[in-house]
Length: 160
Image (tube, rainbow, N blue to C red; front, side, top):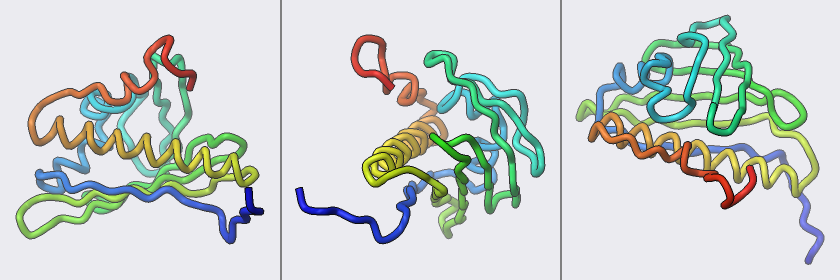
């Protein structure tokens, strides 16, 4: 293999059009009663600026602290959570469209490690947030729970 060198630390970027008003889409991420139907399974509370909550993925026995750095209603959410070796930052941007739909973009930054580890983290993050957005889209647009996050790592198929 050629000597591959990174010029900058990569970040995750993904996005999706959700055919619902921005208030509904924003609420789905700050309100754990909704978020637990398409992403994590349990939360200690609603996202509020300056607050720390705990998110659980009970099927994977994973629990993480999430610190809310910023909330701009119907516009932006910024959190910090544990990365592989140091905290990373996730930012959601909510862009209302003329037809009462919403484009959600997610950026995940702050990865650390060597080149191979960085690529793995960014790949995993991009895949994960793409599944989250697809699950949200199915839920809000069609009232269907796809279980995308829960079914990503079924027992006996692949370690996570």
